Structure formats: C-alpha cells, structure tokens
Image (cartoon, rainbow, N blue to C red; front, side, top):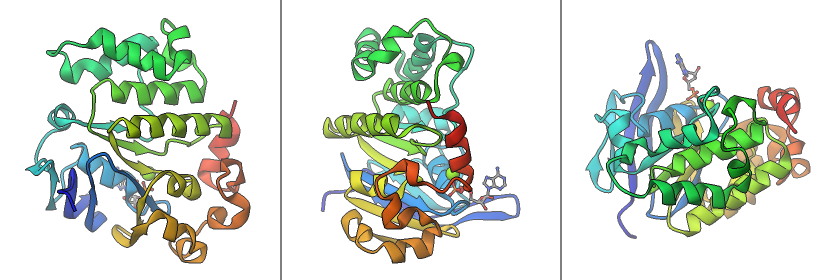
Amino acid sequence: MTAPLLDVRGIHVGYGAVRALRGVTLSVGPGEMVSLLGANGAGKTTTLRAISGMIAPQQGEILFDGRPIHEMPAHEVVRLGIAHMPEGRELFPTLTVEENLRFGYLPRRKEPGYAEDLERSYTLFPRLQERRRQAAGTMSGGEQQMLAMARALMSRPRLLLIDELSLGLAPIIVDLLFETLDGVNRSGTAALIVEQFVHMALGHTRRAYVLAKGTVALEGASRELRDHPQLLASYLGEAETSGAAEERPSGKPSAHKAGASKARASR
Ligand SMILES: Nc1ncnc2c1ncn2[C@@H]1O[C@H](COP(=O)(O)OP(=O)(O)O)[C@@H](O)[C@H]1O
Ligand SMILES: [Mg+2]
C-alpha cells in the first residue's frame, strides 16, 4: 500500500474533563474518499477539528504527507492542503458569495490563480455565479452548503474534511452535492466525510470507520459494512441503517435532531 496522505495515530482529545477521543487511529490514502461514521457524540466532529488544527490532541500524532501537523495552528494546516467544511458551514452571512470565496483563497493569497479558482467554483456550482453579489446569509441552506464546499476548494486542498454535508438539506440538493464531491474526488482530492446518512456515505466511499465513545469501534470496506446493517445499527443506534431509509435522506426519523432541522431548512 502507498503511504497514507493522512495518518492519525492514537489521538486523545478532551474538552476539560470530557474525554471526547480516546485513542483514535485512522488513515486516508492519496486521492481516497473515506467515511467517518458514528452516533451523536461519538467524536466525529472532534476528530475533524483535531486534524484541521482547531483543537490540539493531548496524546498521539497526526501526520499529513509524512509530516507531523498535530502541533500546528489551523492557518498553517490549511496552507499544507487540508480544508475543513465545518458542521454548520460557518460562512460570513452578511458578506457576498464572492467575498466568502475570497476568504477560502486567503491561505494561498501569495500564489497566483484567484480568477481561475473563482471560475472553477462557478463551473462546479453555476447557482453561485448567479448569486455572486448576494449576501450568503440570504441564500437557501443548499446554496449555502454549495458555497461552503466551493470556499473550501478555493485553497486547492489535497484533503477535504466534510462535517455533515447533508444536514438540513433536501434530498435533491444532497444528491447534487455528493455528485459534485465525487467529481472533485475523481480529479484527485482526497476526502474524509462525516455523514448522518450512513448509506449515502457508504455508497460514495470505498472504506469507512465507525466511531463509538471516542474510539474506532469498526472499520472496513464500505460495501461490507453496507451488507451488515445490524452490525452498523448496533453502533449507530439509528433506524437509518434499516432498509426503508437506504440511500434516502428523507428516510431519516424526524425525532432526531438532524431530522428536525431538515424539516425546517429543506427547500
Ligand atoms: N465544546 C465542547 N465542550 C465540551 N464537550 C464537548 C464539546 N464539543 C464536543 N463535546 C463532547 O465531546 C464528545 C464528542 O463530541 P463530537 O465530536 O461533537 O461528536 P459527534 O460529532 O460525533 O456528534 C461528546 O461527548 C460531546 O458532548
Ligand atoms: Mg458532529
């Protein structure tokens, strides 16, 4: 096997007394797309935050392209080629689409190619071009997620970290975002994706890790995990792994936190 692009080795992360991660080990190969699954509170977001330098692990190490990054601040990590699409998008709502994209370009502002990258964003998402002078906060949830993805790509990452791509979005938008992501991946960008719609994630990745209580409880080929819905359900504790919800974001039980926000934000 080729050397991993991302190599997370036994990281521990705490928030005060809360031990969120207790020895997480995972890897992503060059150009590979990998799922990171787990029930609410399992530590998925914390894992992505540790990789992108937003929070420092107390133990363990994180290597990117063979280089230790676990003591680097986030602004240096992004310059090395890791872009993070955070949970909740974190756009600048009062700034325009184009101004938000400009922020994505900041990490490589000393290099040429801004116009080209902007063009690429608009080719990926023509809707953003139509709305380029519109304030980000006035757009639909789906358009905002397109913008979050386009902004992340402005730094020309080699690895994209995506936290809950589908959260609160209508199925047709989720399909479009995943198709775009597949295209980005085919052109060579690796991705580690956290996704509530397990079958969606497994359908778009070759390998997956399942976190439970801050450690990797299960890992393997996505296809094999798909063939063991009961095993998955035992870690995820959600009806989404049953047949009825397969591949269909709308199958999410609405009592779940994510389901409630979907009902609110779908359009
Ligand atoms: N800012 C925080 N302060 C204290 N505890 C936190 C904070 N963020 C997350 N946690 C705790 O860390 C654990 C992992 O959370 P998180 O990484 O957000 O899980 P997931 O994304 O899988 O739902 C949970 O027990 C959660 O309550
Ligand atoms: Mg999370």
